[in-house]
Length: 108
Length: 264
Image 1: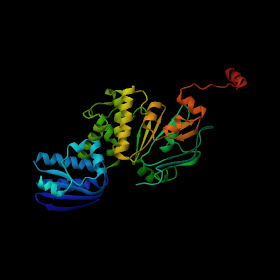
Image 2: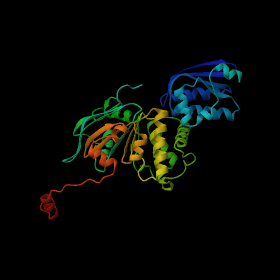
Image 3: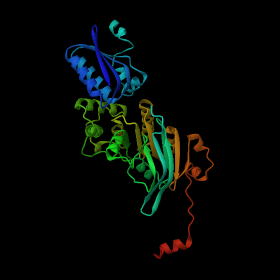
Image 4: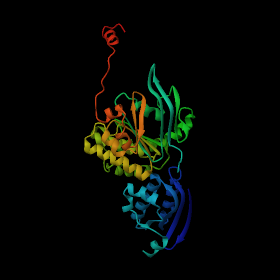
């Protein structure tokens, strides 16, 4: 897994790429909590993610709850069909705010 | 995506002492496939399942999972391979001293270094999938048979394995709960592209979930085929199994007499 961070007002965008699995999900979790801890609204861009497992999704869940507790925005963008299936089986497609593009998130 | 068969069994022979239980089994299972292994009691299906899990060293032949011969690879590699396998045993095999949540979470605690919060969220996610949300604090002794099976299933998939093995998932369950377990197996395969091997003698479940069925009888494969091919087989032993016809045992009269009188 790799990640890139950039700012697109009002969000810090954490763009993940590769496989977010048992080995690499702790890194994704670390970055998500880091920027939420700085009181940033966070968008997690999953468009470059080829595979995400339950540990990766759990990191997103933890980020969402953290953001809610701090009244920060937290959303997903660029969720592939495979990643969406992982979210759907855990009924999390009904929990996360999901955008097709960063522009959609900014416009909301 | 893995293009080779996920599971390959090549001329597998398994013996217990002098008794040959599996007499040269050839079998392949493709990625994302649900393979049901069926047969009457004593056909060797549970032995075959244990062999696939590396629990029965064969007298001859090979078992390959993800391209690796599980009886010749190093212990370290076998350990890594087993992390990609989930098993749901017939009776659940839950640890009685641990709660539902702790049972489900156990593989994560043993095999990963994930944060406690991450493990807890993953556990609750999997309990939601098997419709046991909110039951994580119950103990195994407080569960119904169906709940035990669902907890075992949640534990089997907690690490998102590539392969899932079930030993009689519907045994002892009423038809409604058995149907729920069948649906869960189909859902997991669809959502996670898991390869699934199910050992069962429940015909209804087998026909519902199988992509292909392998029928065992007396340690041999009678046939491997689709549900349709199995149903339409003209093999008498397969038809006896499908129509629940008892076997007619042919007695060797002299041998039987000696057996009864202890002169064997």
